[in-house]
Amino acid sequence: MSDTERLFLTYHAALVRYLTRRLGDRDWAEEIAQETFVRALRQETIVNERSWLFAVATNLVRDEARKDIRRRRHLELLAAEQRDAHVESPDITLERALDAADARRALDALAERDRQALLLREEGLDYPEIAEILGVAVGSVGTTLSRARRRLAESYEAQVAARAQRGQHAAS
Image 1 (cartoon, rainbow, N blue to C red):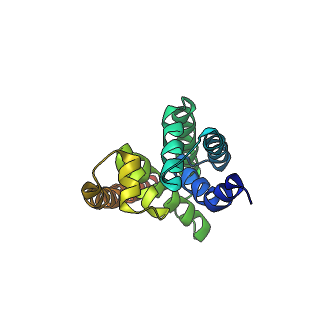
Image 2: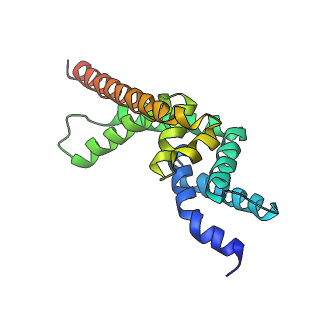
Image 3: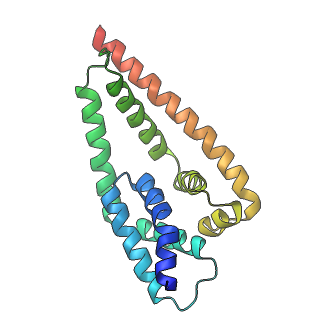
């Protein structure tokens, strides 16, 4: 097995998962992952493969002009689905979809660094790897993650409360 095959087999699934969570679009995540591996092929040496791959993928996402357009389109669709949905419906699937939309909006409301830190940690990266990707000191990763978790919880609770408030207005 070549180094390229090993690199792909070892990191592809985790990288695509991270990018899908980051972007909300699996097809787009696959495109970014593919470009990341193409760039890896061009490298003569990579010291820390996982950190390097996630850092390159993160930078590709940041550099893509389409990012903002796709995110706005995704959020607009979620908002339209939520407006069109009947909150009083006993259908559990609808409630899960609304909860997922609230969670996605809460994640999108976080500062870029907080969102990246949470998603990278969720993918199993350790503090030194996260620090390298974010360009921060290793000692600040724990604080960043703690703050990001707190802000995510607060944002999610606000989303749920706002949805409940909209439901009360609709019932009036």
